[in-house]
Length: 448
Image 1 (cartoon, rainbow, N blue to C red):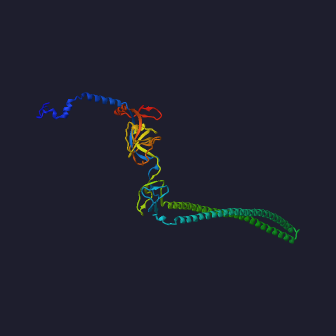
Image 2 (image 1 turned 180 degrees about the horizontal axis):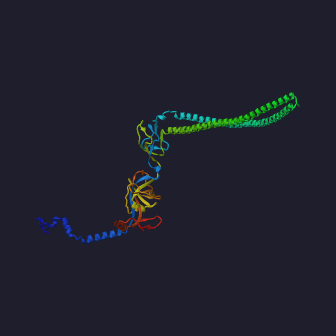
Image 3 (image 1 turned 180 degrees about the vertical axis):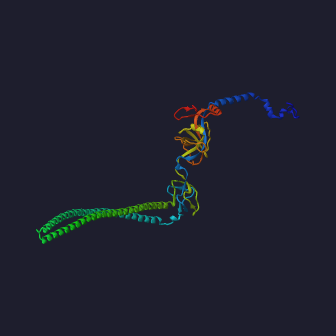
């Protein structure tokens, strides 16, 4: 030391610096070494103490089933607020009235809308019955026309057969007159020859000539009758075809009327179905003016307010928290920790608002934590790149606080393998993953 200062430490008397005097009078080297050796020994012993590896993550209290979570009560139809029956914090039962609204659409202003629609429905139903009766009448008419046409055709067919028989008779008769005329003509020729020879008289010749003319007249009359019979056959065939065509047209017309009636009946049935749907819809809509509680719970917040305020279809009017629910904890873990987590794995949970003393490596010595177990693990990552894990209360351990509410925060520790502290420090220094174990087997080393 250069001692350049005018106030050299050597110039001070020891009696003026009592602390320095006490230090100089004692030898601390041995005690210091003992202390250092003791600390090293303590650290060495600590490295052999057990340490429980764990995965720590913050989470939220939620419910196991979706219908047990807080939900909003929505309006199915648009309307105007008329009267509130609840306020924030009210306890409601399933089916209790929350809100009454009135109609705002002019299509539903009529207070007797359901009754009028039911009357229209009844008239349409009567119309369907009328069409059904008309179809039955047309069916009877078609059957009658078919039967009448069949009989009429039989009648004309008989006439045709009669005409054909008459034609045969007239043909035979004409043939007979032809023979008679031929005979009369031959006889006249012989008498005329005999008259010329003087063997027959003039009167006999004239008589024979008269017979010849009479035979000729009979032949012409028979021929006329034969032609008339042929004409009668043609008329009978025409009448047969006419009757057949007439009744076919009448049957077709009746069937056409029947199909038209069927079409009208089907249209009326469609209208009946539509009116039935309208009646049901109007009846259901009348019941939607009263908005009811979907389940037992507590009204946590009323979202709409003023009387006379208009709300749209599907708007949320209030939130309700179910009164019965099963609590679980929803926590997020990193992808690198996912292989370490198995269903049924033990978890220690610290709830926000509950005093706790937590030793992460010695969960059994912690105070204020509650037991849980892994209930489910998602198979896909969320938008934040982490996997969701659900923690349920562990059976046979201390029950979770009854004052817990959905949405509260938690700090959870998923317990892994028990290892020495030295091994854990070595693992952390080298960046190795924790060990994990199977519930039904011995511990498994990561990567083996």
